[in-house]
Length: 414
Image (tube, rainbow, N blue to C red):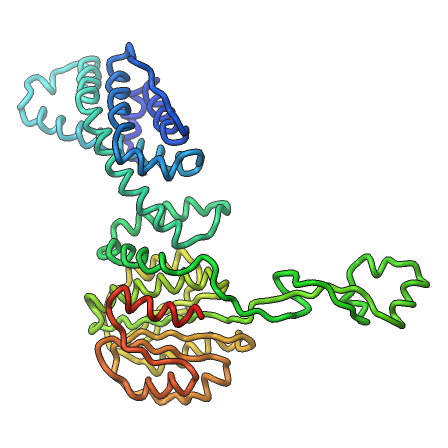
């Protein structure tokens, strides 16, 4: 968000700022942008020189790979660049103003309005290229994170989507350890194939058309069969039946991920666990499975399971480690949350270092068509092992490495 001072600077640039905005946009959108050889305006000539040098850089090549022929990405880059440029110019003016007021430049208080405006323009002119370089670096950092977030949430181009990704990216850039988690996740998700095996079953109602079949149930018949002449309609009803669509739906239920956030998980444990959660979110998208997320300590958080991609990503990155551990309550909560989805095969994945006893029976999971994958970090929990294996799931000893994450992902994508 721009401050009132930043807006004042934008107004003071008058006809120059629209030119800078237009050049920034087309420099990134156009596949082969061209600049003029020179500009008569001294300030715009500085801008032209900056862009000329920028176009020959590796930074431009990277950014251009995101933005070329992409109106939305080019607009986002331009908006962020101008925002950072105005912020930096405001900082420069504030710093110079403080110097002038402290007496480093005499006559500050006695200058006329015209004199102050002239000084204002001189400072902007002096600091423009420096501010543009700063804006370029900040925008590059933002766009790289923006692209990471866009790939993770993977929600297409629905109205409001990019605004949500921009807001989420800005929040993430302020979160401690977010960079490490995102970097780890990028490495593991590269190993998830674009097309994975999806178990499907035939049903009357579904998402995809499988083919056609014959039926005597008039309610299932396609519309043109209902519209047949009366004699032919009754002939089909009495003999072969009507043509009807046969649909298929995914037979796979949800991935329900529960991550231990107790005090003992702080450090490498929680970074690995949260990175794995992001990778499982990506896997769920590929396999067209529902994804639910919760964290737990002595209680289960938040109040309801998270399934919205923006909320899930933000929660994964910002949650802290504190409190005790209650695995029993967490699994019971997961069973309750998945109760309505028991017609499909659901998988509960719990990642913990907790050693508290679990007294839930495997039958409780089986009755709700759920299995348990228990991932134990640096420890042992025999009661959790028995429950996982009894539910036809698995008990894994976590390796806090990329290979350890891939081992779990490969198990779940079968």
